[in-house]
Image 1 (spheres, helix red, strand yellow):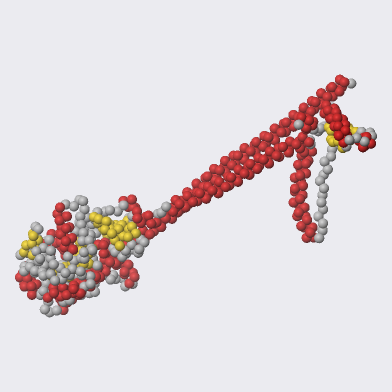
Image 2: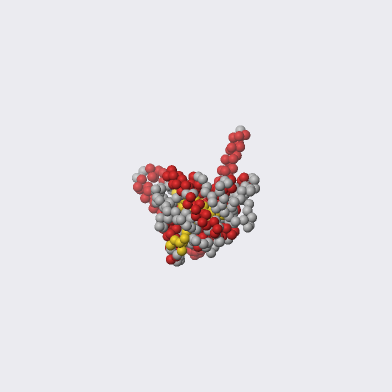
Length: 617
């Protein structure tokens, strides 16, 4: 009998070991699943992190590029607008200048034609100073003068005429005294040279015969304003224009080509200029100081118009033949800064304007609102803006202005009806560029600031999200650990089949609760009562199972006569012995109720593992 019990014990022990192995495999499988899910979550987090980084880089890059491009486009559009204003304004100024001058020339020619006592070159225009002063204000020039062509045989007669008709000089002085813009003395005394005179070397000489340029003389005659001459106290009246080679070349081109010539700025020089150029520039600057106020810089570029005067009044538009000779020349001098002032509104700053031609040095201005600032001789623009430069010749600007005027007027004719600008003699060009100053007003650090702000917001949001993810992950780990512990307990208490049934019933219960809520709402709406279905009982049939209920006979009567300590010691000793035997014999003690001992054996899912755990705890 003892051998059978030993074999049974060994068999039951083997069965117990098999159960332990199954439980260990199940636990290992659960751990593997948990580890696998943890790794998946970890790589998902890594992927999410890189997605966030890539999104942040893409967003901040887009913000920076979009705002930078927007500022760059605004900068370019503003430059296009400002350069167009400069070109249009300069064109209108030139058109008004030559148009006003042409009208004044027509007035002089008309006077000479309708006065029987006057014939060219013996013409003296009454009220010349008054009309010339108005022309200067309209054309932004600071001096103007009329020169007449005198043939060799008219030389002596002209000298007599010029000394007998000097009343206009005193008239000019009186006008100057009343001119609010004239701040120079008017009480000077000019000596009129008796003969025609010119320059030879660095001094004066009488012009007793025509120069090599033309076979006649071209003396200065009426002019405004009158100033004290800076050389020997002698007036420029009767100074032969042909005697100055640089001036003679301008006049010669104007006469031969019947064009308006704009003179280069001979009062400036640069580092490449020779001594003669510097000397001439200083002479012209000193000459200009006699006409301008002390607050005007005479070293800024000076330009001039040489316009041939023709005895032609046949039509509204000047209509002359190729072989027609001029009767005189009209000259006016101006500062180039006056031509480009008051163009841009305040706030539009940093437009660089470069003037250039083939005859003299280039010079550069910067327009800051309505005020031009002289930067100096030479092309001083920033070469990094060459791709944005706008370049036009003054002829192109004049043509565009006259065409625009024609379109606006609707009559197909320009307002200017005089001679065109010369295309061959020192054609002057204008080049317009932006500058760092202008770019700084539009291309700012705002894109970088907004990019940093956007990146900070994105990083902050991502950090909060990652922090939240860490908190959730920690909570999930705790929940997973608790779930594993609960699963282990459930696996210890119940077999796999019962455990799965419990899990399935819990899942079905959750689904039923959701359905019941919908059914309850529908039942309430229909006036009926929703049914409640109870869960399926957990029960299983075992054919070879023994359940023991063991009561102590007479325990109630006995315990009523004993102290509680004695009752407790009896039950503890007795049940302890039963527990040892039950554990050894693979009998599962279900519970004890008072003096009743409930145990079961023959059940295949007997949880010996839990029993041993309880025993060793």
